[in-house]
Length: 309
Ligand code: SAH
Ligand code: AVI
Image (cartoon, rainbow, N blue to C red; front, side, top):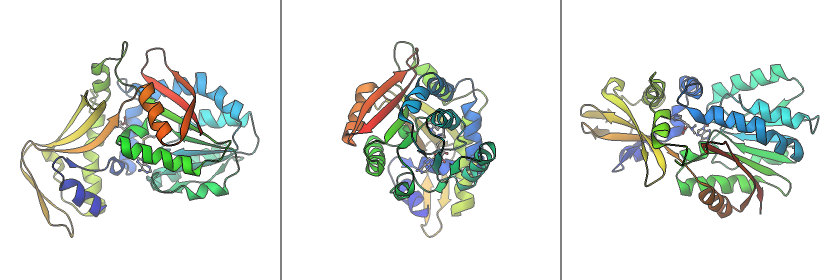
């Protein structure tokens, strides 16, 4: 964590990894975001999972589901029910860095369905998925919520390749991806999703600094930063920043003091947006091929099923 902070704050555009949003409070704030009227991705993905993806899953009849960045696993229940009609023995292996939150989500799932074999993995999703060899196959891998977008293209392809390396012949990969502006999707709609009127996204963004102060011993002054999120059209991504209102000096234990000028920003998140050719290319680079693709009727969001090449 200290190395990430030291490196990130030494870059010309200061940055911090978005995985540090998700302490327990950050995970709760993200859950609140998913229910905001402005944040369309979660409800759109839920609609597609129910209307389209369930039948893909039933047809595949996977024995195990590996979910990367599972969070509350709320939408996962749709996938688990679709699996249930194909096979009686089901294993669910959610992977997430947010350990306490993951344990809470999995306890709930176990209580709801004692026949489900739940094997939570508290770890970074970019690490080798070596636990998969112990799971009954075929395995469905899932990366929902457009979490892929929080990785720059090169890192995203590396993540997809990591999934591909854990896959065997009959396994499949389900990806949820937020789309670029189009005929029925304006830049305003996209930007509103990251600038909600209740200020929940701003609280989520600022919470990262509190988590770093507590867990890494830094001394960011939370009151001195302001949330900023905008669509970078050229790069096809939302960027979230924390802008320093006044000049700051931040102590990094074992790493000295970093100066932040008034008006300077720390980039805390990229949320890349996609279209079909770009996603197809990225999947191909990871030796995966699109077998099913669907979007909602407004072209907000896409679900893709891919198989190993
Ligand atoms: N899949 C859920 C949650 C998305 S929020 C949904 O669609 O609503 C992103 C989730 O990924 C969080 O739970 C966060 O803790 C987790 N996460 C983010 N970066 C991660 C990383 N590098 N490794 C493991 N988990 C990560
Ligand atoms: C988890 N991830 C895909 C969310 C996103 O939209 O990029 C995180 C988020 N950031 C701000 N609002 C939601």
